[in-house]
Image 1: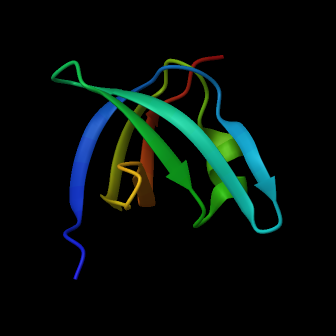
Image 2: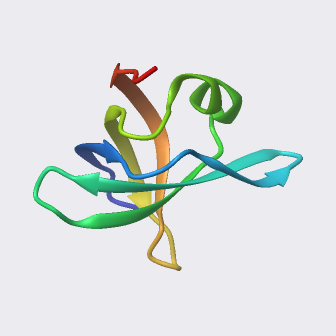
Length: 82
């Protein structure tokens, strides 16, 4: 069983499309304690792509996969930068 964790951080750059079907995004997050995480978004990826932009504050919930990437299953975007 995978252990799910939550984290709070800032998006380092714009989300990048990895795979179009099913939609899979890559995003780099700098956590509040200064750690950089490489993250994958599959669940609600199009909505994430629309809402999240570089330097947005985000809260994410998910787990680490075998490649040590954080797989985001739920998220909340606090601040959107225009």
